Length: 291
Image 1 (cartoon, one colour):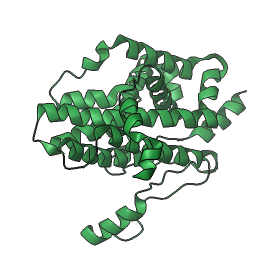
Image 2 (cartoon, rainbow, N blue to C red; image 1 turned 90 degrees about the horizontal axis):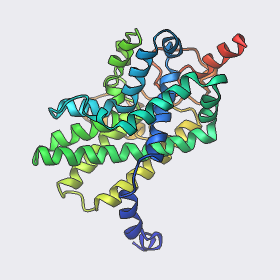
Image 3 (cartoon, rainbow, N blue to C red; image 1 turned 120 degrees about the vertical axis):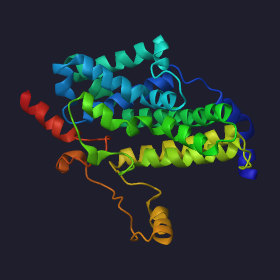
Image 4 (tube, one colour; image 1 turned 180 degrees about the vertical axis):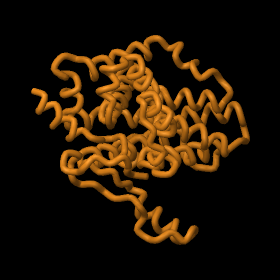
């Protein structure tokens, strides 16, 4: 408690939870999301061959969680597209990342120190989306705790959950990359975060929502920054999950998560890789040859 008093979280947490996300944090979210889209194999070719398909994929990367959550809650899937400022901002980011002369914008945002800052800012938005999803579901289904978890989970990781549909827009079909079968760290963290915010919404967790938002944001931002800096696809939950799965489901110890400490350029392209950092090294080598 003395540490909390020194940090003055009682005043900082509410101010942080009320801080607006547009445009700075949302801009970082759009940049990182579309940056990961460009890492996808064939995305650059699609942007040259069919800009409309590329733009639709970019919009799914930016707003897929809202679309999926609206469908599940019985709202129009295009409801979020009424926010013109968000659509224009995301579209501008898409154009600069894919079509900026000499790839200058892409090179700037992909520069590791800049990228780490953007990744941290993106996790601020993710946490807000999880909390907002749980709160929205609580108003629609006051005692539907499972629904609260599902909507919060979808709001935090909806882009990954509809990745197979997004692949179809690019002419790719890779069912083995289904996020339910191969859950990445952000997807797992979104699920755990949705559970925590649901417990808080139901008053079963003795902590204020603003404090939970601050603590969970710090955890997500720190984890993602460290993983991005190390080019790691592992999970901080791997050890605990391996023991729990072994205890409850008889799964072998050790889990299936592995950390990849080598940069993408040193590893062969694999359809099982996550979206983050995918094929960046191979694409850079291809660009150098073209020069």
